[in-house]
Length: 231
Image 1 (cartoon, rainbow, N blue to C red):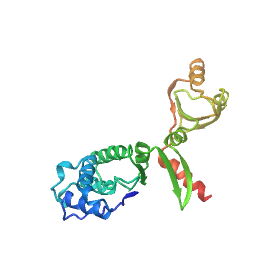
Image 2 (cartoon, rainbow, N blue to C red):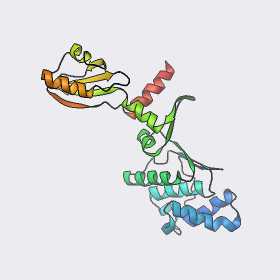
Image 3 (cartoon, helix red, strand yellow):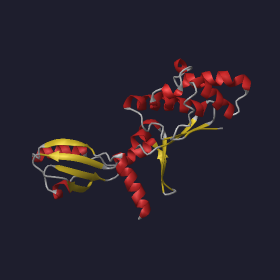
Image 4 (cartoon, one colour):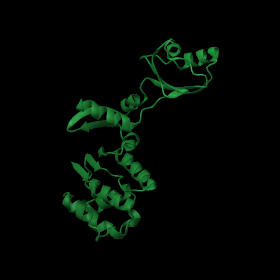
């Protein structure tokens, strides 16, 4: 029921792609009469059909990773576990493997274990963050995106107002000055004071030149969640 690709690919590099996948099918107890079809299906899904007779050791890093994924799905498991599947790949190979994972995810449940946080947002539907064995976040990718956006705006003025003037705007709960021109403005739930900020700035000639959501990086969210667990 489970297919697994560890971070260190379990490949017999002296074999051809066909030879290795045939052995993998036997390891997973695929019926002898179905082995050839299973190998062809795995190669087709992983874009390896034209590499059948190539020695694995002569393949690029990206194609070796495809072979690793192919052995994980050779027996058509319900769950596929991939551990750091894009580590060590170049940007083009990473994109290809991401697309492959998404494609596999249409027919299998895929569990992706990774420390590359942008990978999570680009590939996954649900996210769990585990810190020292404790689950510190469990939600959809949309929940994670909401947590990234939060209730903050990054606002810039050429003639900066005082914090008191900003706090007087309806919905603004906190105003932190970043430098001479930039503020990080926090606002209350169910409020979005952007329009009011623009109107007030125009009236008072604050010279608004920038206003945008202040999006927290995935790395910062990870640190916040894991550090909170230690407090």
